Image (cartoon, rainbow, N blue to C red; front, side, top):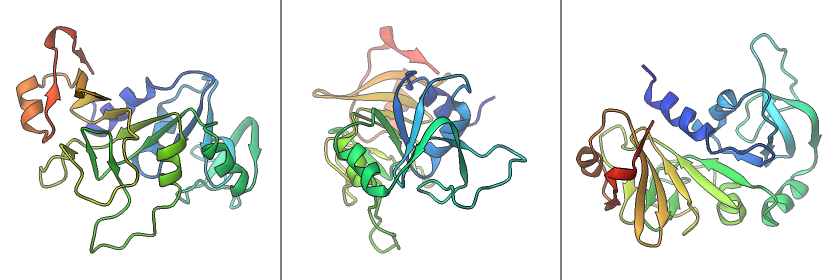
Length: 217
C-alpha cells in the first residue's frame, strides 16, 4: 500500500504536461523528480539558475557546483542551460514558467498561501517563493491534509503570514485533490477508502463535493 507521501507525489505527477517548464519547490515537491518518467519531455527549472535539471542518481558522483535552490546536488539533462539568478528570476517574473509545486503550512478557500513563516520560529526568509507564487502560470500545493497534531491545514482563511494571496490553483494532499474556484474549494479526487463526510470533518474550509463526479487516487 502506498504511503501518504507516495500518494501525493504519484497524483501530482499527473499534473505535468510534456513540453512544460516546471519549478519544484523546496521540501516535498523536490521528490516529484522521481515520479516523472525519464522519457517525458519536461524542463525542470531551479530559481538559482538551472533549466533542465534532474536529480543525481544513486552511484552518480556529485558535481559540487550543481545544486538546486534547496542545496541538494543535481545534474542536468541533455539540452539544459545554466545562467545567473537575474535571468532565472526574469523568467519567473515574465511568466515563462508554466507550473510550480510548493509545500504549505496553510492554504485557504480563497487560494491564499502561507508557507514561509511561523511566528516565533526561525525562518531564512521568504526567498523565491513570493515571486513564484505571484508570477508562475499555475501553482499546485502539495502538503499533508493535517499537521502532526491533527489540525487542518486547509482553512477557511489563513492565519499565518501570507506568501501570496489568491495564487493557488489546486491543492493535493494525502486525502484529496481540491480546486480553488470562485464558489470555494471543489473536490476533484478523494483518497481510496475515505468517505466524503470524513474528508470534510478533517478540513476547516467548507468543501464542494459532487459524489457523482469524484475520482479516486
